[in-house]
Length: 301
Image 1 (cartoon, rainbow, N blue to C red):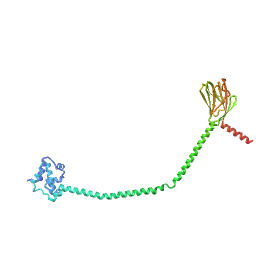
Image 2: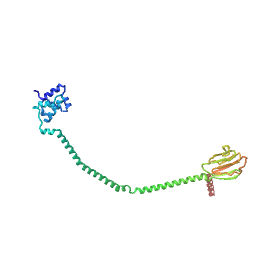
Image 3: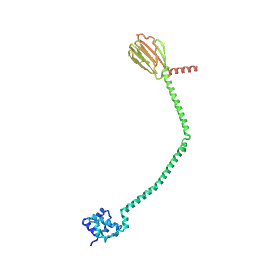
Image 4: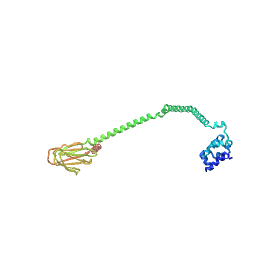
């Protein structure tokens, strides 16, 4: 009579299965499957695994594992009670519980140590912050700050002085351009204009009611001519180098003439007859040069 291993092998071959197929389905290593087919049960991990592996093998090849073990119980080793208990599911669960509890115990032992380490780190950090706040900061701000304040005050004072100087220069320049211009009537529509600004000035001719034909000549050159209607005005730019300005008027009824900010006094403002006005100009710089020249000649004498 064939043994249990030969029966299993015959059933496998009848189904066209290989040892590799049985290994894949049962997850039992092929060396153990080969040992079972050859009746070499001593090569398996233990008697308990012999019976368990045979049952799995039998189910894959279509045999009843329990009947097969009963038929060949004389040739299949029977597990010892201690071995069965050791490999039983209850025993395995108990071992897993013990392992889990041991790990929990390890964590419980490590937690206090971790808390102590974290506490030490926090204390060291607090000490470092206190030290840097009370001891390190004064060293950084010893003496440079007062110097910086002095320098800033000096710069601020200097900027104020320069600003004031610029304002004075502007006001001085403004006064020399407009405020000092003077007009003196010499009679017979002849006027002397002194202290003309260095950037020149302008003549403004206007008429309140009647139209008036006007021509303006600068140093013998016609600058503008035309008719000024009532309520209109005409402005002519006078360069600083101009020496004489001739203004021809068709009439002097309601006519007004300004040079710079000065208004000319006309001898006759109700005449319908043409009138010619002559303005002799001189700049403030020319007057100063003339005065300086005269002073030098008198000192030489």
